[in-house]
Image (tube, rainbow, N blue to C red; front, side, top):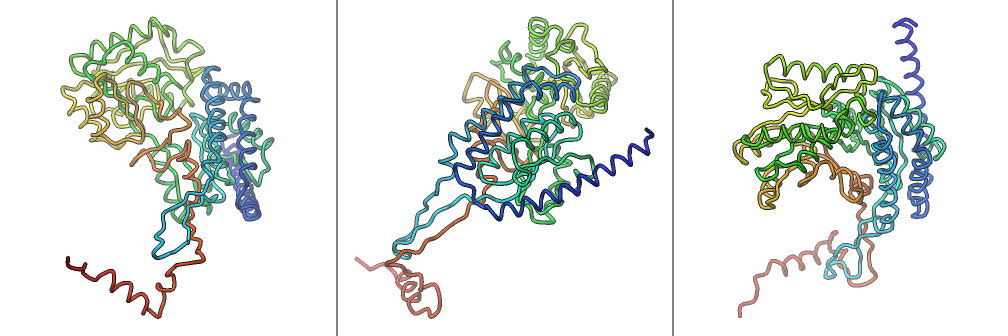
Length: 488
């Protein structure tokens, strides 16, 4: 097939996908109007069906991930892409009744008598979810849990970088839900451009800040509210007393999850200048004793595409060409083009002119940057955009709290990395260019709900009529309110 024929085939495919998207959107709009407030029992059944769907397709999920990434650890597939959202579903089911309960609000009986006021969480309607390639199931099914808990209907747009995962997700969803309830829109670039232009009741996008701006701009044309889960350069600040084996193991272990292709991975490490060599040596020891053949093993996830792999190789070569110290942590580790696996390397004190210092890395490269004072480290973080995650390692809680107080990030951890994204009870999201809004837990349920304020008039003692003409009664109330207090 020629390039022209392939382009024409892709265009026809996207044309059909766009048509199917609009048809599914219209069907879901109609279905929502027919059942705008699913019962607790309905929602519980929907969430339970998701958990069952994932657990019963464990091996197929693992196979699809391996096909798309070239190499993907089966254990990581199980823990992150299957058990993660399944546990999130179980948590939502255990809390759903409380989340749906009416929240009573205070009311002044002097004005409103026996009236009542409350907030009732109302389904928003039809929600779109644009999913990234790095966690194709966790970031599609995960937010879907809270969307369904809130009573919505959902259309999911997977990434075209993960076609095997997209096809499996589409099949699993079709076997679990009616298309006017939940469905999957599979297609290429033109479908991706069309998706945020629909008049959604809410839109979730997970990906880069650059594309996030385009999605938000498209959504703004219809005043569609958005949740943006973006990236950024997530720092780890290691304080003087914490340059040890446990810290290094946690930072490197986190960096190796998806081989660095995670939005809350550690993007760079700030280490006291006198301890940089210690950090590097501990990193070498950790790799040689724990994962000596990391990039040649099944524990290493392949880089998602040749283009992404080439970008990382260029970043590393740019640092070498500029004369900066590059530490290859794996003896004999090489880039394997067939599986797109790449070893983990440190770049010591790289200059700000390097791509690795101003782009989100999203791969197995880790800059290690020296600092001379904690204030300098904090200032360096604050000079950049607000990260999605921030990690501080230190055994003095006063120092750790100083870092947390004087920086801003979407989430943060002390003496561990990335766990803010793993807890189903903890709202997850960004700040500034790392995003807006939250999903996970009750924050996710509320994100995808309309907090409808409701007042029910009582049968005695209210002064509601005072708010409308004629204002004789209102004037008397106002005069009494403004009158000076009686003198003793």
